[in-house]
Amino acid sequence: MNRRQFLGTFAVGLVASPLLAKTATRRLPVRTLGRTGIKVPILGFGSGSRFLMYQDDDQAIAELNRAIGLGITYIDTAHSYGDGKSEERVGRVMATRRNEVVLATKTAGRTADQARRQIELSLKRLGTDHLDVLHIHALKSMDDLTTIEARGGVLEALYEARERKVARAIGITCHADPVALQTALQRHDFDCTQMALNAGLRSMTDGMKLAPGGPASFERCALPVANRKHMGVIAMKVFGQEQLVGAATGERLLAYALSLPVSLASVGMPQLELVERNAALAQAFTPMSRRERNRLVDSIATSRKLAMHHFLRDHDDV
Image (cartoon, rainbow, N blue to C red; front, side, top):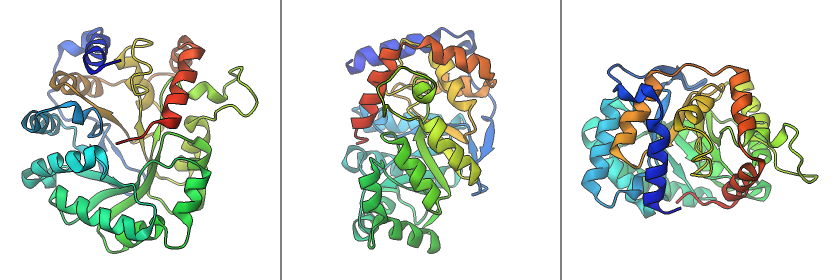
């Protein structure tokens, strides 16, 4: 699916709701980011590949400014997005609006020294001396976790950043391996985590007829650990990185994620009108019942679920 097809298909899915005739005129609902105590809107602004779809920097910055104006004040970026382009764009907005937002970035370094250098550069790009949230970016596997945990590994740099108040909260993100994330959350003192949560992934452990050793689910594996340890949880990939486009409306997919025990959903919005529409959806959000969530899960074809799982397992967030 190319960029034009994605934008057109996704926009059609959102237009289907009568709620979208209204523009969000009030602040978005807020929740607490777990034990951090930080108040966040239920909708966050994802500054990854969808933000980088904007070829023009000024247009991208206008999108971000509009999002903040609508109350989408959790900003999620990463050192590696666009080789720094995302952080540089966000930094131009932070020059005047840093105090209005909860700012999160991620380090892809796997040694403490790599992470320290990346954190320093991220701060420079973002034009700030502190981060509200700092994540280890994209845990891939149990082997990757071993590297992260090793002496001199990135985990040391995160604890150091929190102790020095360079970062108010630290966490880890994952969309590739639920069991690895579950293990990481069980073992370590993270304040928050960001994981893939959507209606197409949950049933991976709900009786799907898969081969032995089939994929586990973030919702069933990692989310309960995060909740038990009172971590803030950021849902990502709520539309399955296009894999769920057409299987359900954007409204229902977003509502599914926000109906889970999470703090917010971070969403990429590659058109200015999607900022307006997603803000309206978040403003009008009503939790889905368990029965409604089950119906949505059951409505998605097994083949689509498996295709999405395989895509996310091998997907690189850059």
